[in-house]
Length: 282
Image (cartoon, rainbow, N blue to C red):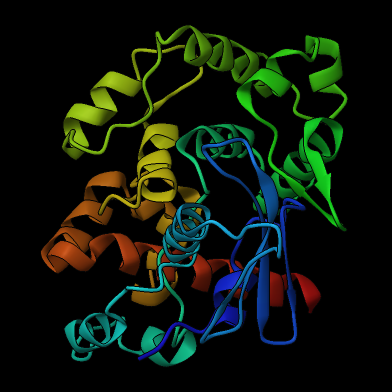
């Protein structure tokens, strides 16, 4: 089963750094060399700026898009795993959808996850886009996500104008620690529990934020077990009240799915978002 770019883009944070035109996905990227440009993927081919003639630049950009879109996800294995479960209908509902479409860098992921604390997803998307338009670098009609240096150059009042509220202080705090090298985000080698313990030692990063960061920023096989959308989605599927679905219940249900638990959790969250939108429209 190939990745469905349209479905995947539909579930991405609408932060102004990407766009979908027809069947082609465009992403503004900043490479390690600090070169900025728009890279595209049409479902078969990668398209690069003409000025990116170097093999190294194109290789890095291709790897980033693979990571962002989860192009190497073995979706057929997931669908086989849930075929005889209460979640089997999700395979048809979200066929072709990959893991939470990832951020190009761990730093971006952390900022976007903090921006989602204690607010609904739609509001969080607007605040993130506000921040991107305020501090990011425009490339064509989209933006490269702001660097840590660009964000730390903003005052707290300027950050708050992005409608981030108290989260502006958290973003400024962790950005300063990150720039000083006191907060490490390349936690690829840490296991889930070790990484959560490390991250939650910093002000502004609770368990939910740490779990979502690991899934969204590093594509680790984890999920935010206390997330309202995840708990509510499970409640809907099993015909329960959301107050009766605790964190321990979420883990008891999802842990048996092993290497697919994180992706399955994402499908459940997407199912909850979809049904909530349908409910509000009635």
